[in-house]
Length: 209
Image (spheres, rainbow, N blue to C red):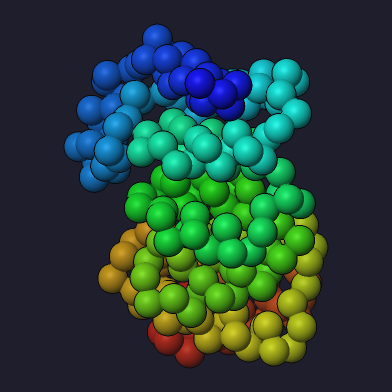
């Protein structure tokens, strides 16, 4: 067994020791379904990520190995450990394709994807996806970029608003919420952006918060 395999094994064993059956059961009842879910809380996973970063230099290889595990905690931890400046766009595409829950989509967006050098490019591609999870990911990434003051160009503005208006009419409340959150952060970029957002939302018969 290699050092990397041993590290993954040790991490998985630590999940068993921290298993929270109530949390895991609650997730299943809410439709959050993983192949294996130990119910470890997100704050605890963040703490573990900090501990691992302080003692491990090969974070890329460890994140890749953890993502390959069909375990909720392994995949979330992978998004916390993967260096944003090292992961390749094609690997991001694979991870997005293998994302099967809203929780994982949101965690990947917050922990990793918003920090990518090509974050905006990926986010706009995901907005145009016919599937809900890439859209959710894309809107969360753009929310964070807008919140940090990153302004889209004219083409980006038009594309964002067009896609967001479609998302606000999506049957999924999770998609609608993610899109509205992104619009709120978009409007926070300045008065011109706020006016654009208000006008766009009113065009489909909705009120801006």
